[in-house]
Length: 324
Image 1 (cartoon, rainbow, N blue to C red):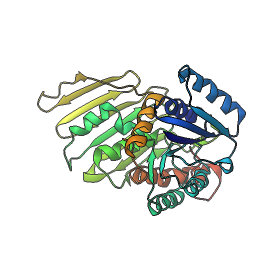
Image 2: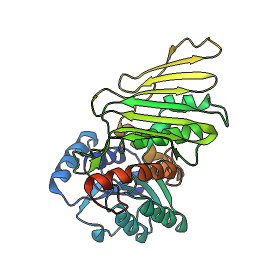
Image 3: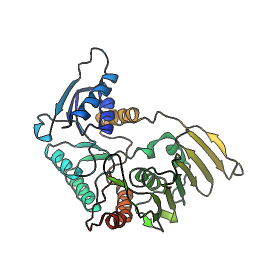
Image 4: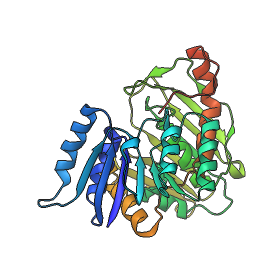
């Protein structure tokens, strides 16, 4: 039987808890969450998925210092600020499998530090940039030839250029096989936005280039609340994908570019996808999520482009991007 520890059990952490509680061979879940309000919400959500007669043992801890068990998997769902300290404590516990919420941390310096620790200790660290494994994007990926130029455009309302834009940046890295993203004329609004989590985010557009002169534009306007529409072009295919309405269209050179509907499949809810990730990690020491090395290009670009905006607006001169 398997043991899991969850660090941080707020909005996302409680969804991970629901997922972990439904994995058959999990016998124990320890939860580090000091705030009673978050605990109460998590307890309520846990009750929704527990089957009658469940013997799952759940323990609530106020800090990592209270940990007394060993674990097969650690899920880190805290906010990004201070994440590096949490990670260092997890390493000291000897945990080898870690599933971490994005954004991983708040600067490139801290990211490289965590990446070094991961590789030095031969750990498996996956980052919850899950968009790249949606069935629709897995299908698109099969149609892109090795070394092919990819044009990617994500258009939407003020969904958080950092928080949600990271998913799009990582998706572009995946589709284009890019190991590095190069700035190509981003236009970010000078005003920084306070989020519901009391952190900050941006609006405007990221513009970058990747491998084989592939290009990416992520345009999240502060004047619109529209859902995200994504357009991908290659030499032989075109796709238009709307996640909100679960509609997707494909055209190709072979059908003279007529846009025809294609299947948008899969349960993309946080709990359902997380259950799959957790099950695979516990069974195979692997899952479909990208690892911390693979998500580095998207994080690096985000830090480098957004930091000057944050520092200018907040009148600071450090290397911290206060997003989560």
